[in-house]
Length: 580
Image (tube, rainbow, N blue to C red; front, side, top):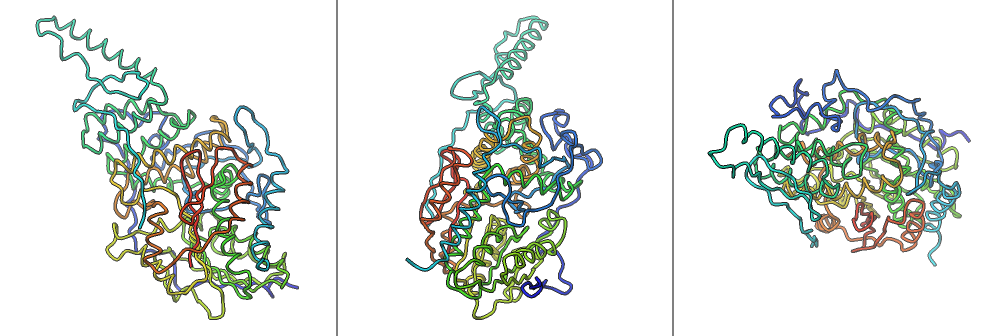
């Protein structure tokens, strides 16, 4: 049967373009850091400040053969059933650095080897069996504030870094104790010796102390102690490297954010990476690599799909509203499982909310999603109807969604809802307003996947420390998979993660769009909107735990307050929950 018998496409809005009620950021200045007191802009360790001007942006490495954008329609790719996916969380644009998917190798600690092909088969099999099994017949926020270790910082602009086990300690120079009667030449020699000792101390600074150095920089900036900040940030600039330890690599982007905050240019840097955007295929390649080497997106998709499959297992007509449709990849395995139902496949209608960022990453508009879903419809003989809504999530209205009676409605928020501002940004509180609007649709299930981090209304200094802790865990998880001098790893961290880091640290108000909240806060918001939790399947939990073994024993999965939390070692990174 021809595919058009099963597939339908609709795009909302004659004359409806990619617009938003939120302000755009002014154009980038020609000289961003003119007033900076030292030549930080020439540092080879800081990839953004050295490549900021649109006319001089250069690649971090030599170009390689361009990655092919051909996608596996089954949603399964060579490692652990991964597939190319664009999502706002991992979708950040920056100067082009080509990479080649074929050169991607997965490494384990202490050795380099390709992942066992059996892991891929097991992953694919598990995903399908999970969703199929779930559709078979029936057989106030509690936030614990971490204690933050803040190094004591003197009020003077210069100091020497001592190499102490407990972290960086800032001590005052002894030049002030030089007797006044000493000859001027001796005073100069003493000051020179102190400077040499300070430089030697920096060169021998343990990497564990770099974390405290970064915190000291943030504390000085928070206290508006600019003399001290300028001295500390210069030391930090010399200590970071995009090819070093995880703390050094993360530190490079944290320093970028701190400098941008000082110069009130965070929004410009955040947007600067669109100055010379990478080719769409390149951007897809970077996100594909991250999707391959880390389980964060896969975890979110599996948890959400499992809840939807369970809630809609007996439905004949299903309507899925996806508030970040991206490539549409999330729905490949779910549609395949629905098509194989013993009672026959249901009619599935998918409404995809889109935005210009996702459009660019796809290299096409919603037509790219149309093609993918049409191919799935034809391949698995399941009727699928697609309806595109090309607006930003906060601008979505009930009328755009075309909710029909007689359909089981599922609403999906995949690492997206934190981009919608709340009452701390706008009095009308678009974040809670969007949840209330969704509640008015009477959905059968709502799935929420979010970063487990507290950066929304937290004051700058505590937000900096939270961001440091969160992304350090993520950079460490990348570190065990790709070697430090690997161009793919550099591309992934710069193109997929760095913009978020800079935005969180350097921007405020409406310009700060990365506003993560802990699960406890999301639970309060959803409860106030009239939702109650939909239980997640213990079967889904067990399957995800077994599949995490494809990556590293350091990944952990815990159940807490009705949600599933994926973390690295002792740090939770992603939460998944379902509501009705």
